[in-house]
Image (tube, rainbow, N blue to C red; front, side, top):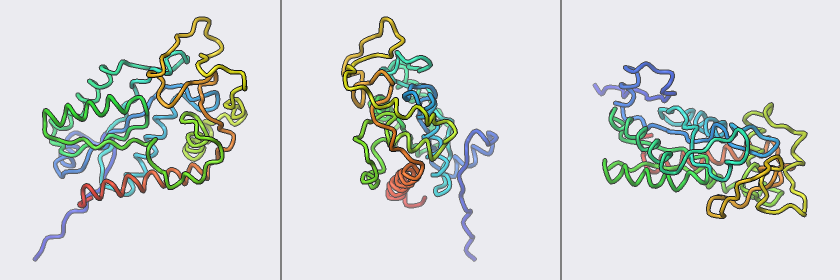
Length: 261
């Protein structure tokens, strides 16, 4: 008589006891490690925690379709373009790379053989690639990186405003779908910069702004508002469609890579 294989379901690591975590890691479930700023300026209309909220929402939706172990989100990261905006947090590239490397290696030490980094950032992409390279060189394990800003292109026809890259129509639509109560609807118009505004202007309230070089400004120059696109055309419906497209992209890629999922 053939034994019925145990159905594998994923969960959040933080909800488990350590023996439960050991069992599921031993079963070969991939670790999903979300990376999203816990505090980074997103214009006058979105909360500082936007990146974290989006990364965790994507992780939860992936959990509904795939047997994954969702690790706690890495909320501190390399965000040099935002150092002038109050409340925003930033660590150096080397510090961020070391943090990700050590956390990933801790999961490898516990028996994990598959790790997916869910990256909701632009400036974080290069340090994450370096961390993944280090882990491959030292352990022979290839880390998979899903860069959320590069996914969901099947929705490109939805957008009415010119892409801005940060706190724009796309990102605001995501927040309207995920956490609408946190979107300051009355400030959406403030994301449209005055025609006379300098591209490299820092926040208005800073007397002596730190001028950042173009290399330190992923996604283009920041504006006085901290947004780089028109958010006035954002809707929750667009955000839901973009979320679904992002999830579909990741699920398809992971199942292609690991058919047992």
